[in-house]
Amino acid sequence: MMKGIFPLDKFKAYETPFYYYDMQLLDETLRTVTAEAGKYAYRVHYAVKANANPRILGRIAEAGLGADCVSGGEIRAALAAGFPAERIVFAGVGKADWEIKLGLESGIACFNVESAAELEVINELAAELGKTATVALRVNPEVDAHTHAKITTGMKENKFGINLGLLGKVLDSLPALPHLRLSGLHFHIGSQITDLSAFRALAIRVNELQDRLEARGLQLESINLGGGLGIDYYHPNHLPIAAFGNYFAAFHELLQLRPGQQVHFEPGRSIVGPCGSLISKVLYVKEGEVKKFAILDAGFTDLIRPALYDAYHRIENLSSEEAEEVYDVVGPICESSDVFSRDTELNRVRRGDYFAIRSAGAYGEIMASQYNCRRLPGARFSDE
Ligand SMILES: *Cc1c(COP(=O)(O)O)cnc(C)c1O
Image (cartoon, rainbow, N blue to C red; front, side, top):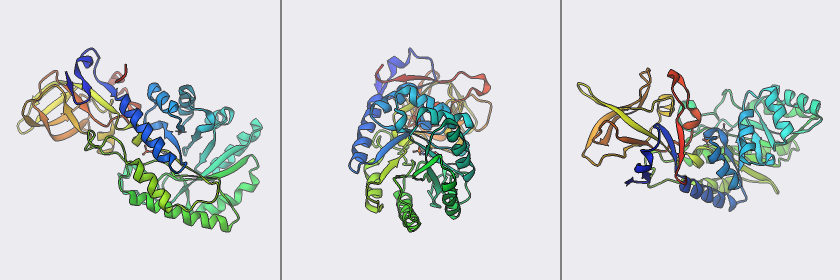
């Protein structure tokens, strides 16, 4: 039996909960992003932090994307998955010495640097290794991404990036750091951004900055616009691929590039979010006085987004066609935040039913924990 895209008979052989990845959708997404970015010769680095499952990473590397890493572990995972070092960039506010050395020794393309203090350390470590580090400065563009407070990063006095007001001082320090080569500027304003006006504001801010830098006699090789493109969590079947066409076109329309300048993007969620679902079994249906609870064998240790970001995920009962009833869908963890959704209409639920929590491919499996001494969720693929 199939319900939607899900092979329920196959699922019965698997231990729940597990992530199920629709590899056809991943491939189609990769074809779309490559084609849309290709129209303007934009380069795309996949943000590994969204999902570092080795099979997923391997498929993305095969499609020819680069990798955006935020830790030494991610650099190792990207290299192991087949991303060439010259397509790996390394961001993060707290790069440890060993991580910087790993980047230098592997020959990654660029360090996206977030503070003056970090520039000095990279310069020192590069000197020790007899290398020159290519760096881009992550600038805080003070653009409001209009997204959840826990995933907005581009506003003033964030831990991320170098504030606009300090950029001049940081640039002044570069001539004294001979083991660094400045290649460009880096921006990342937040995540799950569905209103393109935030990206338009970013493009305009980048133009202003480029004019300012040009006035100082600085020419940049590359502009990295980060990630953040949102997906449609409400309509995973009808709109399974993010609006890559409109997204790149918005930048193309507004960005005033200098000759030979490269433009980079770092999408994470929009590449892998839609292709993953968390599959879970119903342990109990608990009838309260006013509410009914569907208690799953998956909890926030498997998918933390609802508890951490108040995130919405569409939930489907794959085992039932009976009339819909209203349930709170909860997990087994001993925390009251372990709730996937409240007052949700679902086909009548019984013990043993299979549930799909949709659009969970990004910031799902990778954020799983073993709190309550739980097992980590498994991963299954549509093409295995
Ligand atoms: C998280 C992050 C991304 C990816 O963000 P998405 O919203 O998943 O596209 C890209 N670049 C940087 C620097 C990030 O921190």
